[in-house]
Each structure stands twice: as C-alpha cells, then as structure tokens.
Amino acid sequence: MSQPFRILIADDHPFFSDGVINALLPYKQYEVVSNVTNAADVISAIPTSQPHIIILDINMPGQNGLELIGRLRNMWPHIKILVLSMYMPSDINLQPEKAGIDAYVLKNSGTETLLTALAEICKGEKYFDANIQRQNHHSDDGFSKVLKLSSREKEILQMIKDGNSTNDIAEALFISVLTVKTHRKNIMAKMDVKNVAGLIKKTSL
Amino acid sequence: MSQPFRILIADDHPFFSDGVINALLPYKQYEVVSNVTNAADVISAIPTSQPHIIILDINMPGQNGLELIGRLRNMWPHIKILVLSMYMPSDINLQPEKAGIDAYVLKNSGTETLLTALAEICKGEKYFDANIQRQNHHSDDGFSKVLKLSSREKEILQMIKDGNSTNDIAEALFISVLTVKTHRKNIMAKMDVKNVAGLIKKTSL
DNA sequence: GGGGCTATACCACCGAAGCGGTATTTTTTT
DNA sequence: AAAAAAATACCGCTTCGGTGGTATAGCCCC
Image 1: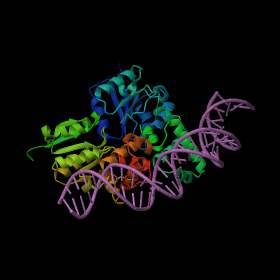
Image 2: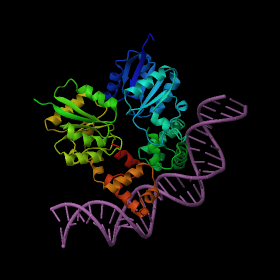
Image 3: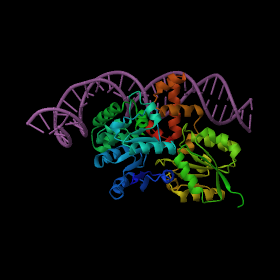
Image 4: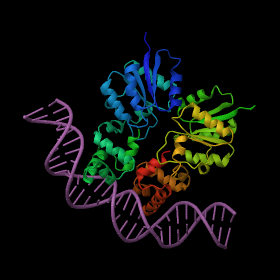
C-alpha cells in the first residue's frame, strides 16, 4: 500500500490513547492523524483529519457512544469504526451488522488484538473480540437493542439510570406519569430486562 | 535521592499501563518494577517486587478494588497507594483518611497530574484530584461507605447490582426474603441512597 | 463477661415498579 | 395519500421496593 491508513483516536483517557499511539508507532501502514477526547470533537475533527478509521472508546463522557456511532454511520458510511470497550458484561452481545461497527475490541486486550482487528478492517473484513463471539449464542443483545430505542425512550432511559423515579421524570418532561410508565414499559420490553438494575447493566456497554 | 521509588502498576488494560509506563520512563526517580493485571496478582507480586508505591486501577475485574485497598492497608501499611479511577460520579466524594489511600487520580487526567500526585505522595503528602476536592463539600461519600458494609452486605449488594430481585437473592442464599429485605434496607441506609439506580451509581467508583 | 457488630427473622404500610392491555394523535417514511 | 412508527394517555392488577420499626442468637474483641 502506498498511502498509510489514517486513524482518528477518540478516547478521553490520555494514558490509554498514548498507549495505543505508541503501539501503532512502529507500523508505518497506520498513521494517527487525530486524537480527541470527547464525542463532539469526533464529529468536528473528521473533515480536517479525513480518517479512514476511527478507534472509538464507547465509554466516553456524555457517554452516548451508541448514538455517536449511529450519527457517524449516517454521515460518513465509508469510515471504518473500531470500537474499544471497557466492559464485557455477561449478557451483552453484538450483532455487528445492526450495530454498524467494523470491529469491537476489549480494552483489556493487548497490542496483537488491536493490530489483528485493524488488519481485518483494512481488508474490508470485520473483527469481533473472541470473548464476544463466545457469548454470541443466546441471541441476546444489549448493544443493537439500544439502537432500537426512540430518542424519547433514550432520554427517559438516561433519566431512569440517573436515579429518577417515574414521577420525577413526568414532572421534568411535562408529560403524564402514565406516559412515562408506558415508555418505561416499552424500554424494558425492547431491552428485554425486568428491572432497573438489569437495565443499567445492559446499557452500560 | 539515591534509590528510585519502586512502583507496582495494577491495571487490566495493557494499553493504559503501557501509557503510564511510557510517561514515567523519562523520570529516573521512578522505577516500574511490576505490572499486574488483576487484584490477586497485586498481593502475590508485592513480596518479590517490594514496591514503595502501588498505582491501582480501582475498576479491575473481579472488581472489589475497595476490598483490595483494605487488605493492602492491613498487610503493608507503609506502601503508598495511588488510586486510578475511570469515573467521577457526581455524588462520590472521598474521605481520604477513611479510605486509606494516598492519592486519587482520574484516568482522564494527563501525565502532569500523575506526576504531581506521585511527587506529593513521595513527600509523604496526599493528593486528590481537583475534581474530587471541588465536590468534597457536601460531606457525602460513596467510597468509604462501601468499606463499612459487612461482607454479607457486599455480597447482596453485588447481587442487586446484577439485576437480581429480593426473591432471587433469598433463594440463592437460602435465607428468608425478610432477611434480604433487612440487608437491602441497611445497605441503602449505609450508602445513603434511595433506590437501586442510586446504589449502582454510587458503588461504581 | 460485657459491649459492639453481624446475620438472621418478623411485621405492617405504602407507594413505586412491572405486566398486559387499548387507543388517539402526531410525525415520519414510503 | 396510505402505511408505519413514535409519543401520548388511560385502565386494572400484582409484585416488588423502600420505610420504620423490633428482636434474638452468635461472634469477636477488649
């Protein structure tokens, strides 16, 4: 290849992205062209840095990594997205096609895993962490499910996670308690959980 | 100083600890003597590596970083503990004396912060992230509070966080539902929260 | 051997959460 | 314009969660 692959790193932990940059340094086929620390900057950095690949920390502050992925997918469908995640909650599984990402690597993986993932997506393939695949059986999935929530539902989900009761939410949003209950019910159904704790577990990718 | 400070890094994210090691490399007064990836290894690595300072990721798998701190404090009270944490939940505050740690640095801080913290604790001082101090007013604290939970309570807390209902827990532990309710009540009281969501928020340091 | 802590168990009350429906209006997509 | 999706509202019912008590048996520590 003549041109190196341009990579944008989005992670709010300097030490972590430093580690990644360092790990990629010896590999001339990759060039880290940008290094941002929050979701908003990802969007604004793309036009100038023109990355081929985005290495995205899904657990960034302001946190809705899932929404960000959706937006990236809409605006720049050709850019490859490699998701880095801290967690592998036992009941979270990925349906890559639906999530619209090209690779998913756990943060506690090492350099080799990251390089393998990068190599795969550069070939146009996809790469998902072995730990995820191992659990991909019970066709259950928290990741793509969140994508299925309407924006109103996501809003309410966030408020639930913040510890607000149905009443609090109704008051804050100027809607009926009954409406909130309905949303709550629908969210639970879509996420396939039976209580708040499960909801938090499943949506804290 | 003639002898460098010996540092043990405990973090399950290779890229992260790589970043830290790299950041410390130019500073001859620090020597990273060990690099482990889980809580159990911390204990076993201490006798051989004889660290002066432990840089500890509080969010490690098997997760009870708080318990680990307690154990370290008991067994090696002279070793300095610098805690690295991913999160700064809005209602978490530290009472350093109670928690028994020497420094608390957020993972999204940079090299300078880490160096400052290290310098302080080498002088025998303590260092707590500015973001924490800013919130240290409303003398409220999730950190040291978890330390006050009995082991049974911690066990039940974990089950609650995992999405188990009071009934589930009672069945699993072969105790009365009423007992579980009591524990639940006591946990809520000790942690000073009013629902499961708050509990999770507060105990996910 | 007394004082404190923990785990256990029980009770009553109330409000919130969760389950299963129906239904209307608005918005978006086709 | 028709179809689909989302947001809104309502109902009844059951279970669970959260509050505020009491109490006892066992343990460890000074």
